[in-house]
Length: 338
Image: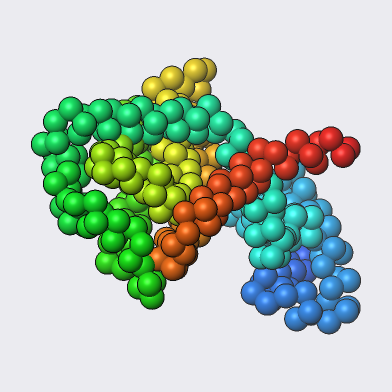
C-alpha cells in the first residue's frame, strides 16, 4: 500500500507539473515552428520578445524534469524543444548570399591550398603522361589509335595533311559550340568526375586517369608538332585548356586526398579519415564545376571565334594567372596587410 501511495503521489506531481507549464511549452513550440518556416518578421514584436522568456522557461522545466521526473518521454520532448530554441536564438544564421560569398572568398581557395601537394602531384602526372603520349606516337604512329578514341580525334590522325589540321585550328567562324568542342568538354567533365569519384580505391584509379588524360594530350600534340603546327595547337588549346586542365588536376587531387586518407588513416579509423578528407575534397569539387563552366564558355565561344595565336595565348595565360592568384597569391597579400 505504501508503494502504491508513493506511485500515485509521483503521478499527481507529474500531472501538476505538466498542467502548470505545458501551455508555455506549446506556445514556445508554435512560435519556433512559425519563425522557422517563414522569418522573424512573421512574428509580432511581443511574440519576438517572448521567445527568450519561453526558452528560459523550457530550460527550467527540463532541469526540474531531469531531477524529479520518471517520464523519459517528457524529458526527450523538452530536450528537443530546448535544442531547437538554442539553435534559433544563439546559432549562427547566414543568408544564402553570405554563404556563397564565404565559399568564393574563403572556403574554396582554402580547400585548394589544403590540397596543394595533391594538386601539384596531379599536374606533374599530367606532364609525365603528355611526354609519354608524345614519345609513343612519335616512335610508332599506330599508338595514336590506341590512345585516342575516334570521337575525340575529330578526324585527325598522323596521316592528316597540314592543311586539314590547320583548318581545325582556324576554321571556327560562327560555330560557337562545334560538335568536337562539345564532345571535348563532355569528355573532360567525365574525366574530372571519375578522377574524383574513384579516388576511394586508394587513389590508384585517380592517378591512372590523370596519366591517361595527359597521354591523350601528348598524342594529339605530336601529330600537330610533326606538321609544324605545335605552336598553333598550343594557342588553340590554351584558351580553355589552362582552366580545364587545372580543374581536372584539382579533381584528381581531391580523389587522391580521399584515397590516401583511406590507405593511411593514421590514428583515425578509415571511415573517420575518409570523412575528414571528404569535406575538403567536396568543397574543391564544387569549385571544379565552376571552373569547368568557365572552360566551357571559353571553349565554345572564344576558341571558335578568336583566331589570333597571340590573343589565344594571352587569354589562356591570363586565365591561368587568374586562377593561381585567386588560389594562392591573394591569400599572401591579405596576410601581408594585417
